[in-house]
Image (cartoon, rainbow, N blue to C red; front, top):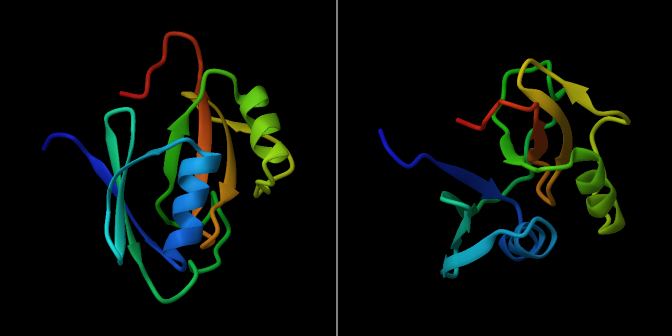
Length: 124
């Protein structure tokens, strides 16, 4: 398998496109009435219009999928996103064996994380 991508089914395609492009910095590659193809780095994100918001769950404890975007400076990225109105899921950052991260929800309630890898770690 090559070139993994992410599929998001969103509640409001226009609101979601604005969020992912204007707030998170993804680029529009293709756009249709019911879908948008976005790109960040070499990763494609396919977004389709759905009918419901994401199911509520306890992030980090319930099984689910999350789009993870890597950043160079987690604290600065959190500050920047908060200045753009992004509300984070938790009041503090967390870390695992690969790095530090923070989670927030998109306009449809889909959880996304930003992650700063520890030195000598990579997203691979």
